[in-house]
Image (cartoon, rainbow, N blue to C red; front, side, top):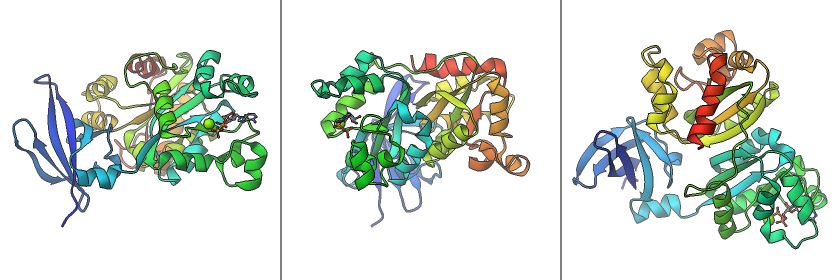
Length: 374
Ligand code: ADP
Ligand code: MG
């Protein structure tokens, strides 16, 4: 029998101002989808081939875009789907420590090549007391003060990693904490490759599922409340969005590496799931001007994107040039070393958005890091 995955999904219907529930079915064999209206008990969308959904996108809490409808996946629809797709899925916290924040691209590459995906990310700077809270369990250890001092000494990047056995896979990738031990015994691990010593050891990984739940809540609270704030500076800056298609293709590490290698300074970084209405608002100036407007809106709201604040004097123009012409095919001809030439496929799926006009840099950065991260 053909494989069929089932999900319960919610869609906010703006016309009726109602949350509607659907069963969403996905057929991996041909990538087709089908929707069933739960309340009215009828077929809502007949089985149709749809190229923009992939099996990797189908996990709890994710938002997927089906024919311009943003669906929140809230439950597996049957036991078969839960067993097949959900049983070993875990979430864990990876915290990139201040010594290696500029190596984030390399670290993401290693994460993706271990079949984990990054579902949340936020660059933040912890105060002494926030760092002490986070490392509470080590309060009585002799290295506690040094550890807290180090972790609060500069920006860190908190990430939620998801995948089969995510917690142990990430800890295995990291290797043991001790600098001498890790270099001697696990020379290919992240800590051996990028670490300095027992304290400056690249990153943290939760050591149990309970710890993961607590630590994820610390950085990404499930209810509105206090959480460590982003690091945007809102001056001399431009906005870069790594688009959802590039995030889901696992290109974030490569793109961040290219940006850093070109000498640009990333002063804020955060992943956002942009609501359709917010995508419309963000792209408002292109409405009626650019024929791709509605496709651009759909792309931006089709899944998580990664937003960067790039900081520097007159950075807007140089960063735009570095992104290249908006059409990747043209970019490949004229400017083959640009981000869009390297990582884009079409005018809409062109890997990155960058601010057009220098005077809009601060506004676009504010839109994400002040309004949406409010
Ligand atoms: P891990 O980070 O692998 O979970 P621990 O939970 O044991 O390791 O320790 C937390 C952090 O405290 C380590 O990552 C390291 O930065 C620091 N640390 C641990 N042990 C020592 C030590 N003996 N000397 C200095 N720092 C240490
Ligand atoms: Mg630990």
